[in-house]
Length: 125
Image 1: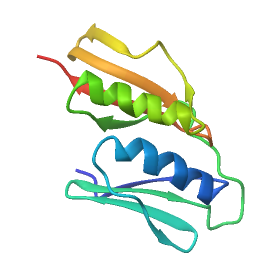
Image 2 (image 1 turned 120 degrees about the horizontal axis):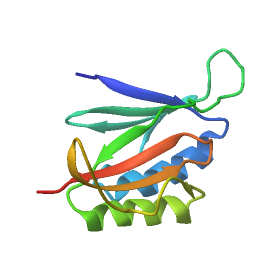
Image 3 (image 1 turned 90 degrees about the horizontal axis):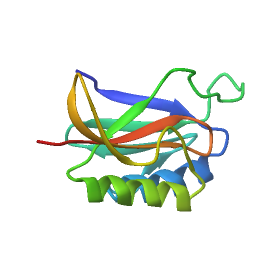
Image 4 (image 1 turned 180 degrees about the vertical axis):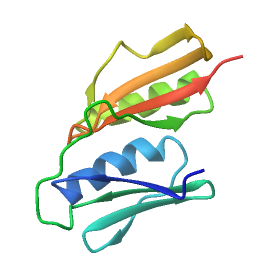
């Protein structure tokens, strides 16, 4: 459905350090730098981080969350730990199982150093 997702940052070097570590736990190679943007290329799409081209400060989306698919609860925990150790902050409940209308999910939530809300999700059977 999506070709790419792009979010903003106020510090490209900090964002690259954070996302290289977090996405590395999911097997994503380090970002390619293109001037004021960084790109994480995968077979299923592209995740990008950019300094705003209008020169205004980047801000996080209130109510927005970007979810990353994980192959196991252990991978979600590694994702979360990498994020916290690289300047992210835990938000929502601690990582763990949640049950609801979409079934049984293992979720881990973070805010990146710019305040963007992220989620690692593993669908349990």
